[in-house]
Image 1 (cartoon, rainbow, N blue to C red):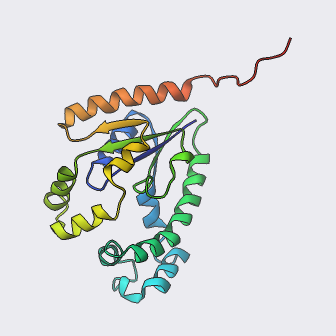
Image 2: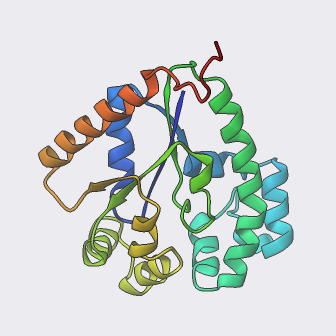
Image 3: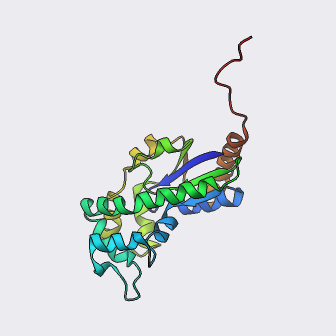
Length: 209
């Protein structure tokens, strides 16, 4: 099994890269999706969030109002840290469970938005960073996701810098390119990952005669 950490700044297009990797055969463990699951109605995770931030972060049907919570935490580092302290251990436990269920020769891609921020690179055999310039991230967040420029800049500022992400990268995928170029790059990266996953393990010691 090859354990790959996939990360990138908000608006860099990491989700598109993860989708393309799945098309090639990767087993995807999506931290964002799991993060939603662990705070679903009736879960201990949601109860802990309400204890920390109050019932105002709930919608009328009792589910988490993610936009409201996001507007609170992404503008306040202390509140963001408090939320992460609740959610991250739950996400980590579920991610490990899913990883254990994968085939022994699988390429398991952990899609982790805050991989750099939380110092998680050592957990993986290698780290793939999806990269785009900040101006491109900002444009996508405002134009495609409908964020205000202020909200988009706050969310970008709450994450690691571009340089900090690139420092931990074993492989960089430039996503400030046309989709056809991105597809070709992901195909090449997949060939590399699959080769690593099926490579026989190296013997660390020689057998003594």
